Length: 381
Image (cartoon, rainbow, N blue to C red; front, side, top):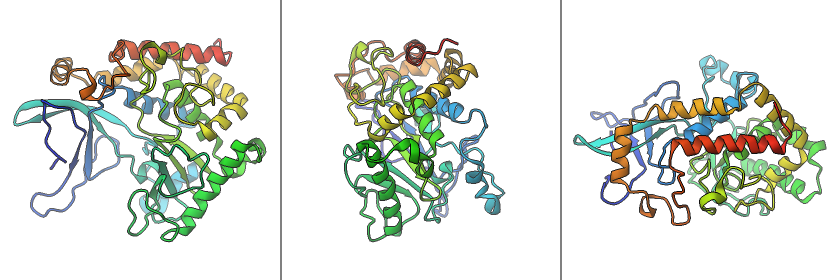
């Protein structure tokens, strides 16, 4: 097992990717962790911004509980049954985001750092067959103009289908023109809805998996994720026509916002993340359309999730405690000593402490956030 580089405890933490190989043959090895799909590499995330190591894993587990209610599935039965003839449909644990478990790194018996072993969000986790040209999975890469610009390969990473010779953010107009045409079609539709030249309510059944959009809106607003509208979300289709988003990379949540310091990022101060004119430094674009045009459906979905206890401070605290239970407090103390809480270890000067690196802060933040959304949508239990 080899890492991508040294870990120097005197300078700064590093994210580390371990590539698994047979020491005798050099062939790749696949490792299966718990109920995750097997992978030939392991990513160990250090999370300089979230030193508690619990924010992302809490948010993605919360998403799975939200999105699986009430059917118990994270996608339509057809998306799962696609694989029946290949492997008897043994894809029921597809994560539809990342998952994480806290792990320690040692070198020659010396403790180096705490971090999170995170699943890689590969194609199987989105029920994608990369040999099927209609199984399209893409992700914007800090693409601030996606809600205004024509779809361009330079703004997006195409994860599925497989394209011969493709590198991230390549132009695919010649190598995969059919894939580009389908991506352009959905982006054009969304831009027309943003401009008001197409009515989303009367047309959405043709282009959108609405439940995916509703649950994504709820998750992003509930977690306060400002980095999830022109970056850090996965976008996919299984038929080349109807699309939906999935969350990705949610460590900057629960009061951590790069552009808002101190109490400005408190749960009751940030407003709606997916609403134009709010505090987000990313353009919410089509997410704003969903948030405004499907407000009745969002309120009804919130009520159902609250009534069922899927969203409650007790349920969220339980998820947080599961993540915290993976951490050895003694080693967290050592980690803090090795990596002081300052800008050199990942926390920029405009995101000062303010108590944000503590379990109690995260729990209190979610408690206040649930109460704030209850108030906005008139839920009184």
